[in-house]
Image 1 (spheres, rainbow, N blue to C red):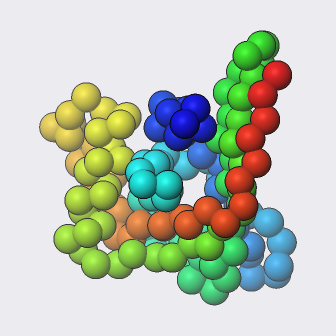
Image 2: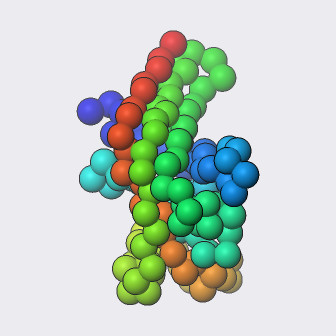
Length: 131
């Protein structure tokens, strides 16, 4: 499916969560797309993680192109926090290897050490656009 290939090839997902006042909070994040699910590594102290803990409803957008072809996928879903250290470490390594050639550098190691949870996004509604 073109949409799955696209989501696996892109590097930035814009994640929207609902903040404590009921407003949107949107951030660009690195991610892993696998098996129809999105995984985002983060820290439980971040606003996005706190928001997901209080309200699992999220929206997301991945898009590319400022000239033709323009293609994007956006959707709504339910997010859950994964806190199991072994699972978090394994997924975090897979995410980081999408952005770094190896984990043998200080930035990758710092991000690996700081990541104590994974936001797992289960898509419920998906919209695709292309021009």
